[in-house]
Image (cartoon, rainbow, N blue to C red; front, side, top):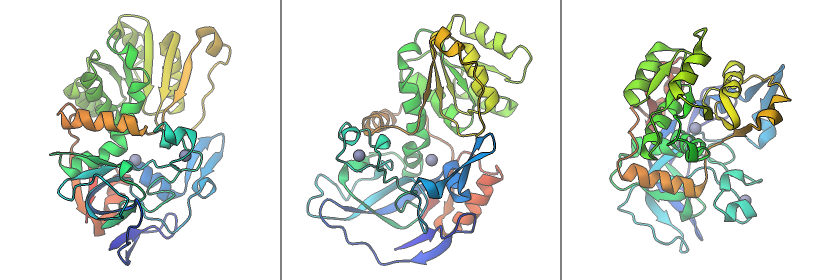
Length: 350
Ligand SMILES: [Zn+2]
Ligand SMILES: [Zn+2]
């Protein structure tokens, strides 16, 4: 097998050939057919997040050890499996759930491996998808994608699941009052489609970029609003037509987090998803007085992933636009993503 390996933060990935891993026990060896390139890969590659107030979150302190193979949006076919790996079909295409935990603690047993205190996230704690093959610990991480194109199914594991899990946290309100979505990038656009798939009203979408507002309308937004307009708050309120119960902030910059907080009514929910960086100065007394829930959402659980894959297989998840790159051009693809030159999702194909 071969991979494009991150040996040092901020340095180009290095092409390596390695021996094919031999799966034992419940392990599965997957031949990768597509691996999505995510903004998180750029963050991880840079080595740190900006936490605001001059603070940085350093990935080395969060259990990332170099060298590591990036990539957490992985689709492939079964190449080999250990004797305890059951119910797998070599003729099928699978997508991998990458947010893996220990498999035995309370949250893991509930399927919420993304909350495991000893995470084994692919492309972070363990080698990920920028490779021709990957060894997985257990078949429960594999989801049959049916007739879906692997290049389109792979990003469901990150952007799709992240949007979906955020939306599930406010699902009970979306058919009553339009959901407010801040940010019409990849996650926001995906969310617009998922709102429809779950029977919600067309959402009200806020973005400062006219091209993204246009894309949001095309994706099914009910209203689009320029977040920099002086009366943006009033426009959003009017478009929703009622007290706003839920806002999902896919940017989570200081300005959008502040706007999200001001928008929701009593008992409302603000779901923060974006990793733009920075810090917020919410007026603390208003948090109890409005009884607001400020909820962070990161990726999603195994049951949520199953539900999302089922929706996708039923044709209810609008396919993302993708641009494919050969795997050995991973460095070029990362540069292109960094410079905003990629339309839709970049997918690396070995
Ligand atoms: Zn990602
Ligand atoms: Zn666990």
